[in-house]
Every structure is written in structure tokens, then in C-alpha cells.
Length: 242
Ligand SMILES: C[S@@+](CC[C@H](N)C(=O)[O-])C[C@H]1O[C@@H](n2cnc3c(N)ncnc32)[C@H](O)[C@@H]1O
Image (cartoon, rainbow, N blue to C red; front, side):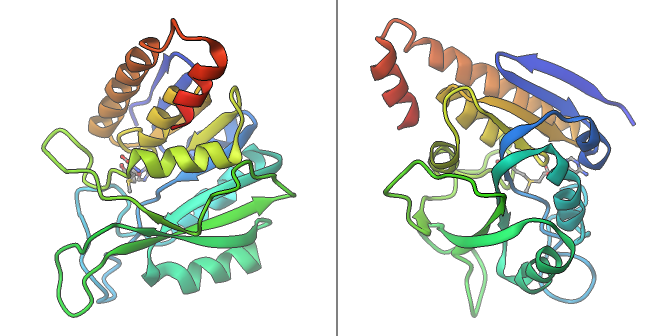
């Protein structure tokens, strides 16, 4: 399989299979990731996007959690995007077969319905998993986060997550200079949040199209961040967290 490594500012991006790359990843302070949900495992529940690698494999999420554990520092949080269909087996897997503890679940309210019938989807669930006893920085972090889905075009990832949602989790669980890992980076949204907020980032993505999108978006984010360069440090930090 073709692999690549790109370093852009404080972001290190690997193109390849995260299950192969994770054993080589250094210690990180937080994981924020949005795995392929495995919605199409031919078991008759729902449709799935066949253009996304491993989207027919609901166990890919579990394999990532096994691989990611050793990358985490002693006290660290994993934010794991998921949907309602996977809660039973994902939670059972975490409880029985992982060393992570389920701390909470956060609802991402998409601020409007998607296409569908009977029960039109308007939310996703972010499982908050802990290794050790991580600390949380924000006093205003709700377990319902309401942000609209970014508009999808030919130039974007079909499952791109909203930047303010990701920035909120980065701000809640890390300090400036900490490192965040996203093993299913897609178009690099977690990396963009980190680049704008002075965090280091490690991202892994299998699909070259999305890897290239991530490189471009993160380069653009650093260019945007440079616009703040002339400001005094406390004000700059404050603006980066917004
Ligand atoms: C739901 S998408 C992530 C989208 C991302 N949150 C964004 O905002 O662009 C999941 C991504 O995982 C990638 N992927 C699937 N299997 C993978 C694997 N084994 N290793 C690395 N990436 C993988 C897919 O190509 C897809 O881009």
C-alpha cells in the first residue's frame, strides 16, 4: 500500500492504514476521531456511503480503540463519534474488551434534519472515553452541542464535521502545545482545529483524495493563523480558542 508522511507546521499527517500506523505513534494528550460507522454490513439496517473506506466494517471502530490505547498518555480523553445504531455493541466492546472507561456521551445536534423518512436523523453521539483521570478545562461544556453540518461540495469530505464542535473539544481537553491524534482524519477537520488553536496534531488517513484535502486545509489554517501573528500573546490565545 502506498504511504506518505507530510509535516505541516506542528501537524504530522500519515497516509495509510491507522491499524498499521498506530503502533508507531508517539504519546498523545487526546484523541478526537470520527471512524467509518460501518453502516453497510449487509445486515439490513440503513444505507451507507460506499465511497468511504471500511464503511462496511462496524468493527473498525473497535480495532482503532484497541490500537490507540498505548498512544495515550496516562490521563487522556478519547472523543469517539458514533451513531445510535452502534451504541449497543460499541459500549459492550468498550466495557468488556478495552481498558478505557466510558465517562459520558455527548449529543451532536445537527441543528436541522437530514434527508430520510419516519425518523429523520438530526443527531450523532460522541462517546467520551477516558484513560486514567483526565482533567477538563471548560466550565461551559454542555453534553448537547448544536452546530450545523458543514455544506458539502465536490471539494469537501462527505462526512466533514463542524469546526466549532471540534474546537470545543480541543479546548476542553488540551492546553496549547499538547498533541491531539485523529486516526480517521478524513479531510483533516480535527487538524484544522489544532492548527488554529496552537495544538500539535497527528492525523492518519487511508484515502489519498481525503489526505490531500487535509494537507491543503491545514496549510490554509496556518496561513489564517499567521494573520494573528502581530497580536499580543494572551489576546492571540483567546482568539485561537473562539
Ligand atoms: C467519517 S470519515 C472522517 C471525516 C472527518 N471527520 C472530516 O471532517 O473530514 C472516516 C475516514 O476514515 C478513513 N478510513 C477508513 N478506514 C481507515 C483506516 N483503516 N485507516 C485510516 N483511515 C481510514 C476514510 O477514508 C474516511 O475518510
